[in-house]
Length: 160
Image (spheres, rainbow, N blue to C red):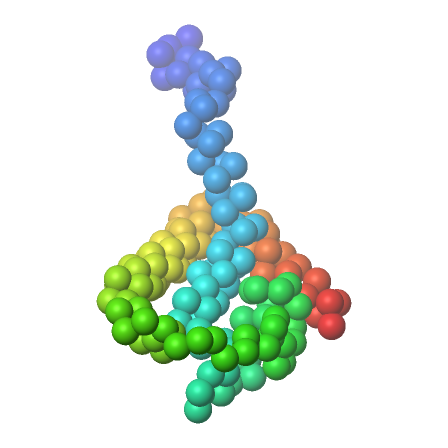
């Protein structure tokens, strides 16, 4: 026997390193949950800026209202809002901000969380692309991604 013939045999007997096992599990779990991560990041931005609810002269498109209700209440619904606005409150002190004029820090926080959500969307989409283009098991991972996308839609449709 030569060194060249012993190397493959020795490699076959070595245990799989923990890091490789973790990467494998990460790929399979990621493939299953990635569609939901994309959904929740995108609809979270809509909710962050209150684009899923009517207010003032703004009326959200039906699709945005439906995905907002799915994100928030786990059901497809139009015009579904939790509670009517509270009765008129006593006038606030001059130093307090009116509800329609958020503090600058609130706007900056929303902008930061929007950046986080967009980064999550880009990162998740990149991970899905890597799984589907660079893995030896791309077909199986694609099927798992499809199951991860279709299952919540079917279950949500059953909630109506």
